[in-house]
Amino acid sequence: MKSFFAPGKILLCGEYFVTIGIESLALPTKVGQILRVWEFESKTDWKLVWQSKRSDGTIWFEMSLSMEQLLLTPEELEEEFSGNPIALRLVDMLLALPTNCWKRGVSVRFETELEFDSSWGLGSSSSLVVTLARWANMDPMALQKKVFGGSGYDTAVAHSGKPIVYKLIDNEPNWMSWSLPSEFTKNWYVVMVGKKQNSRNSLASVKEKVESFVDEPFLYHQMIQLMKRLKEATDLSTIEAGLELYQAITVAMLGLKNPYQTYNWEPIKGGLCKWLGAWGGDMLLVNEVFYKKNRSNLEDMEIFRWNDLVINE
Image (cartoon, rainbow, N blue to C red; front, side, top):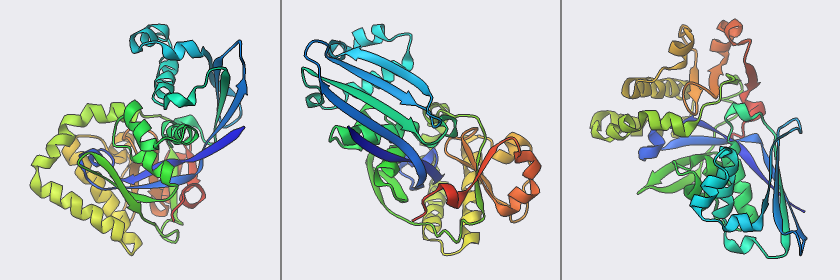
């Protein structure tokens, strides 16, 4: 048996605009996803078995394929799994792996185990991409591009296992190490709102507005400078003010609702409340000032201290 691990991810800043070459700040989480793989000889019954488990150990998805099914054409696969989109996406991912992964007479059993709730938006797909690519001795970014597309920041941070500054240059992924002092984040909280947001669908809904942002030279330049100030910030107030400013520009340019508008919460002086990841779901970042003022509004949501969940350095 071989075992592989990849962490989850949190996008602190850079959502949506990362797809047009604006830098983003992303961090891995202390929890992630484990992939276990068994290979065994089976001369007469050559197959692939897949089982996915939740964080509590219960099974949420499983399937069994004959290796012959992996040889079907894309059109045949579409028909074979038309009623099961999860299975179809998984088969797409398996078919994107190098062909030498599949050896005649050798069956393969995969088992995945999430360490976090799949509704939290911490990157169940990206952590799977990374672990599966490692098993196949494949570049995770290449697998991400083949199967999911998108900016790829989530796969990059899961692959790195460290905080990164991520940027697309000529549509190619680039990143460098970055750190966020834990002293700054000791009074931050991550709030799981209990509503999973599909980041690809979320981006598709505002794609045209995001792409038109490059035609707004003043705001485009301001965003570049804002991200530079955020990644180089040496004090907490600069970071928190910068995150709120990023959120305000995003509201103005894309017509999306910030958390205050979504939940009818009042902004508070010195407070911070920002979406993490796709807007309208997944997670919120709040600081101590906001948390104390709005504790009753957050009581139905799962809350974690940032430093207990996130890898800052």
